[in-house]
Length: 196
Image 1 (tube, rainbow, N blue to C red):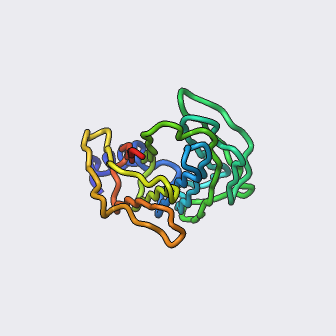
Image 2 (cartoon, one colour; image 1 turned 60 degrees about the horizontal axis):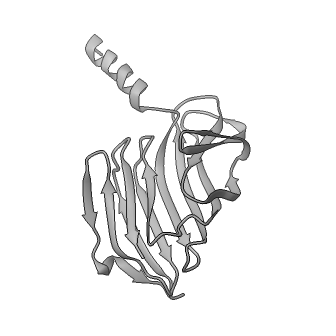
C-alpha cells in the first residue's frame, strides 16, 4: 500500500472509526397519556466493537421533565451518571471484556415524567458513530393523535413534512408514526417534530 493511501486510512480511522459501529438502531417513544405527563422510551442498539479491551458503554439522553426514571439496560450495569451541557451521560459497565468483532445488542429503557406538556413536541436522534440503519417510532395516545409531523435534519437544514398517511392507528387504538433510513449521515441530528 502506498504511503498516501496508508496515511489516509489511518486519518479516516482516527476521525470516524470510534469504539464500535451501530449495525441496527431502533427506538420507540411512547406518550402514555393525553397531557404528556407520562412517557416511556425504549431503544435497541446492535453494535459491533471496532477495538479490543472494551469494558464499558456510554449511553446518553436529554429532554424536558424528569428523564431517566427507572432506567434499565441490558447488558450492562449503570455505574456512573453525569451531566455535560444539556446531555446526561450514563456509563454502563459491561462486566466482561469485549474485543474487535464482538457484537452486543443493548436494550435500554426509561420513563419520562412531565416531558411533553406543550402542544408541540420533538424527539432527537444523534448519529455519533458509524450507523447502518435507524428506525424511530413515535406512539401517541388513542385520544390525542398527532398532526403536522415533520423530520428536521439539522446539519443540512432540511425539513421533510409527513403526510397524514404516515400516521397509522394500531389495534390498541393508539397512533404511530415511524421514520427509518438505511444510511444515516454521521454526526447528523434527526429531529422528529409534531403538533398534537
